[in-house]
Amino acid sequence: MIHVHHVTKRYGQLTAIQDVSFSVEKGEVLAFLGPNGAGKTTTMRILTCFMPATEGRATVAGFDCFEQPTEVKRHIGYLPETPPVYQELTVEEYLTFVARLRGLTGTTLRQRMDAVVDRLSLGTVRGRLIANLSRGYRQRVGLAQALIHDPPVLILDEPTVGLDPKQIIEIRQLIKDLAQSHTIILSTHILPEATALCRRVVIINGGRIVAEDSPEQLSARLRRSEKISVTLKSPPADWVEQLRTMPGILSVFPAEHAQSALIESELGRDMRDEIARFVVARDWGLLELRTVSMTLEDVFLRLTQHEEGVPAGPAASPSQGKNGSASDTAPPA
Image (cartoon, rainbow, N blue to C red; front, side, top):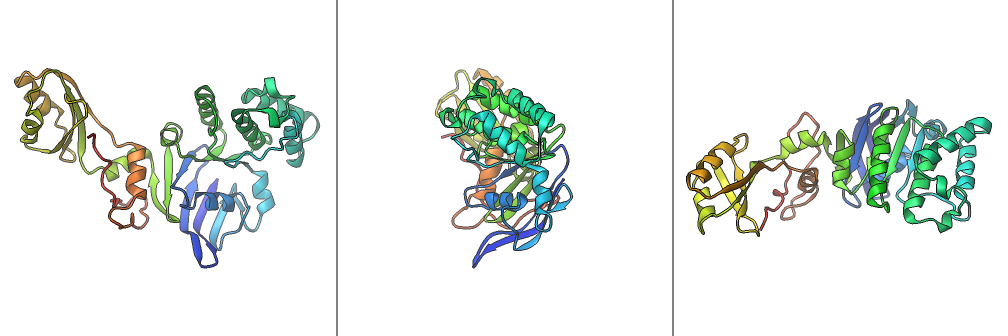
């Protein structure tokens, strides 16, 4: 549904994005991640036909973003980070205005209006001025305008900004439901949200794609060691030093809580059984022993941070290994 081929965008001497390529298939929710200034907004503006690319080609629903912008706009719903609402209108007036711009009239307009108002729980504020709504409700109205014409492609920039925890859960579930019949690009700074909603992530840094894969596969590719968390009931004063003597253990980082530590062992070697035997034999009181996975936040930091001024390096395709230049996320103190 969405195909971006070697797209570059320059502003004079400044290159905002360079040689960006990725695809999103029908029914897929893709997380588009990157630090501020990485090129996320520029890429979204090209896909939504707000600006042309300098080089390369982008298509949405089979239509070229440069050659057929009107057709592209008919097939997308776009929610920018700041909802594009007119505060002097009521919710119903605004959505009616947007629906008419989208070519909806008569019964179709009323049906779509009722559907999005119900789906986004806007019934109680339908007749209120947008200026008098909370930020959370304005965000819902912004999402409603993106959905009013039932487009096959949704491009959502920070869709849960300003929502309370209950509303966030509702919007996340809505996005999951929409994925059954829509293709969705989701830009977010809430990395657990990307993990919860998206099967695949694209990470952009410095205008280039530095990773593209599922969160699980990215974690596996970037992991340099196995990590195990251990909590003991009554360890001796030198228990950390004793654990460090075990073959296969690379390092032990004690936590602030003196009875817990993070253990790093050789990559591909599960040492939980050996550690358990070691602890039990010494009667230290084993309370917890569990593996610690590399989170999407760890992956994001590895790929976008710099270590001693060395950049994160060139993009890696899903089939290639990608060793980030930044060190592992710091272990517990």
